[in-house]
Image (tube, rainbow, N blue to C red; front, side):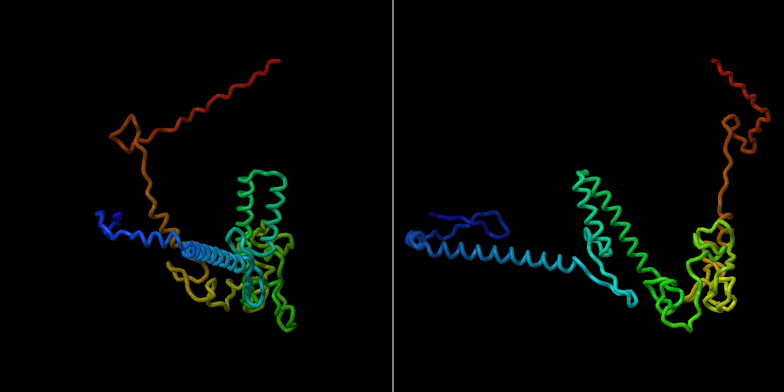
Length: 274
């Protein structure tokens, strides 16, 4: 019996040497070889499955929980749908998912609701990372939660939790509608420690609103950004193009403008019949 095999890189058949009858009889008569081959194949498949399961287990163990340090404050994280959020938020979302499934809500609605809640939890974690204390200049906490103010009595106590414009405790100066403008009567400056202005308005502050250095790219002032610069806004106003409309009756003359009718329309009285 002649066997054919394809050569590498071509579709032509190349004849190979046939297996002898004695060799075929020997293979059939020796069941140990076939069983050994099957056992080796089974071992390989089992080992590959074990390796895959180990890898998956390691990923789940690594990704299940984690901890980060924000200037000495330890925050425990957990992964929900592959995204890192706070562990408390992850437990809350898991419980929410169980409750929604038990109520018989559709799968699409559950996925949409969980996605919205997960995004809120991600934003909450991002806000936690961006928190900066104005007293110690460290992140992870605000002025009212600063440990240095609570431990050291020598540091002056800055007012927090009130509106710096009107002094109300019900809102902050961002939401204040009582006092308009940039007048902060109830604020205490972090530079000169005097009341009546904030740090960016302090005369002793040479950096203005740029604590790490810098200035407006247009006029060089340190008290506003480029988007708020008056020169930049004037340049935008000058670059505007105003075009007149062409009247359909007078196509050739652009100067003719339609006169507005001064006639007042008479308002008809409504008559209601019963």
